[in-house]
Length: 543
Image (tube, rainbow, N blue to C red; front, side):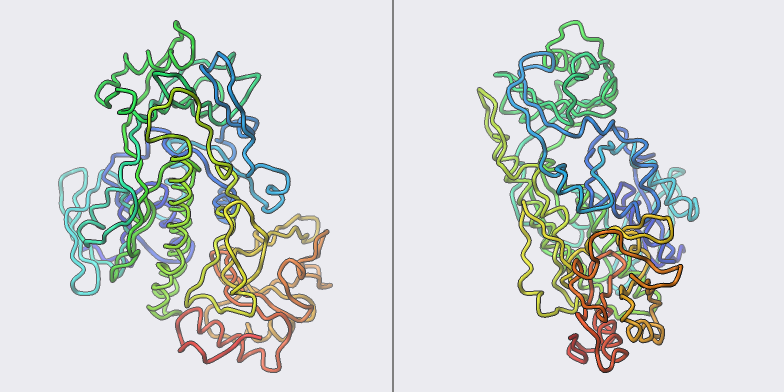
């Protein structure tokens, strides 16, 4: 019998990220993946700025950026008759505007999944190689006792029993765990069908003078997209709406795939090496609930969406971050089990919003019908800055204040706010000669932000038995204190000099007091107890 606090089923980006975060928070886990290794096809490529903030906080941002496609390819989307031929339209994604880039210390990153996953795997295995097992399949699952009992089988055919307190189901859109638990999904199934061809070909001469992340090819008999991997000799080509154009997935042998790529490129003698072909169907489906007793759905198991917008993987790894700190708090005895109910309350609305937006993007581009000419997307496509940064959680793990009811998520607009439940705003600060973002202070535990006038809050935090709360001072006179370098952090966070903001380990604001309080210790204690489900709601009320 293997005893482990958390069993993670699925070794893709979501499962591996969950493993990394649980290790960060001091929780042992076992991750199993039925495939022999990480992804061999590019699959997802877009890592948005909110996700890169997560990996920045984990110290992984430089390595991921070093493997990304050249940044100059991220500034445009191009529609053309062929890759070498007439350009129809180009679009500069709104997410990359100067104003949007100023919202974060991190930037969007184009890094294909087959390159990205090994980075995650190495980090997950750094906590112990035996914590991540590939070629290992879940055979059976029993949660009737309130805990997890599972049978797994490794590459050698040997079966083992696993007992875990909790299970993270990151086993994909066709999740066997979700199906076994009989959790239905709502939405639209099989919106369109596609084939993804991973190949090598030197396309430099056709793209060097017009770099783009996507080259959408529009022909009467073919619709597809060249997906930039490295901007030179490594690419993917996505053939869209197969059945509408008379194709079947079975046709796409290496020889047929080569001819399709040549036709789309407009180069009949192009040398092509097909590396892999994968067929799939796009659906827009969200699970009715993300929790079933000790089991939590994450990633595609919880929300399956079309790739139009690039939200699938990003939403999934953000699920993992949200869930991991809560599991850790419960397993460390710092929180009540009810804290885990906030995972569904917080992440399901996000899953629903991004899935719907991705579907509307796909429909606006005519993915469900044969088209005789280019169909351009709706104006929201790749301008969804509000969906990237604007998640506003409403749950038992957030202590509302007087501004909470006014916070609204907009698809195309995002106004930084420290309203409880929102992502903590980015503000540049300095510590000595080092440039530091407020976001760099978060991601490893609870953080209480205060100014020089917030001594009572810092004293109150030091008296809390658990969890430990980091209390950086912004604007103080000590060498270790942070100082402002431009924008006012108090203005960004909506507090006075003697106010305080409590930021959760997932960098979302859990509680805020705009000013000081007569009994700071009682107020902060009650807020933490409410967030962690340690006391009945209503025992304390923030000012």
